Length: 422
Image 1 (cartoon, rainbow, N blue to C red):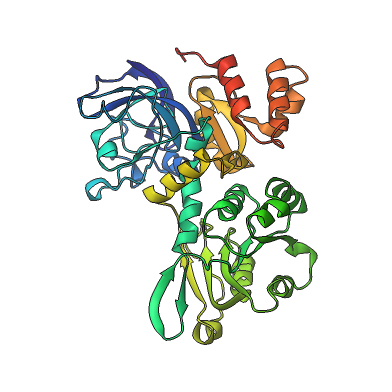
Image 2 (image 1 turned 45 degrees about the horizontal axis):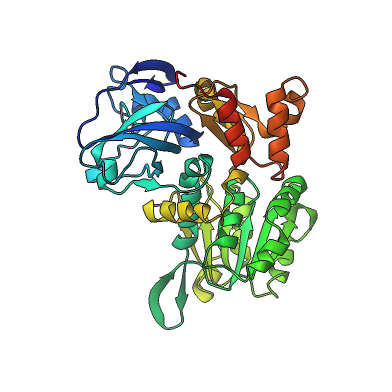
């Protein structure tokens, strides 16, 4: 079968090409990729080429497929898997496979396995390691966003607490406790708000901060105080840029005792130090934001480390269990992954989007593999709709869900533009 895919040959050398896939073996699966969300990790791979740890040294002669946050459907399963993976089975892929200690991963290392392609061949190790995860929701985009959502799930599970006179670390947030998410109304922050409100282990108090009032208002319109209250959470949105004493204002919401769990979503020294300053006794600070500088530092109050048992952890990804949990929550309608999506596009937009990702504002760029469409922001639909009926309809459909991408919009887009020979 012929596929159309974006392959990496070296530094900043991405090419959209059509080529024949090999016949699958009895322990492989042929799959149709529906959509992929472009990750900053793909940008890093494109910038580094063979110098990237996951990209093979001979990529110039044997190019690999890019993209690792994708949703696919089974077209045909080899004999070994035909009873487990039926044609039409929809799934997400856990890219952190760690097969036999290697760093190989889809989107970096495989000639025929990656998200930015129309069709792919899935090697045996993904099935053997349980890294093909069924997705049963009524859309495709949620599966494509399950990997970044799993990073959020892992963040809260990596936090820990102690007990007086006990040397064990008890993993997870303090249930019913006090939590603050700082600088947390960007795409990943929104995902964190959604997850922590709707997961089974929740705080009793949740404070969301930022210095951009428009973004705070947007977050509050998606994840409302009323919805949080329904889930047993007292929710506050706070603009720390509007107070002379943000630490005092945030601690006041806790009655002065400080927070049990604080997650920092910005690699900004002042925000990290603010996070440290609002910790209560046995408070856990999770530094979620990934700094680009290797010499990023911030002050830590070691008096509180000693006398109040405050502590720090960090996470940079989730595992298969986290991803399966998020897929299950989406299937049950408990998560709203569309809040991460700010742009959509077709396979012809992959290269430009990937190479320029840091320069493109907004959240996730969601690419549909079987259409051609320039990368387009959802908030541009209304203006483009003045001259293009398709965008007018997409604007109408997204307004039904408060400006978020949704199943109806996805169905309409694919019905309008999708072609099997793309």
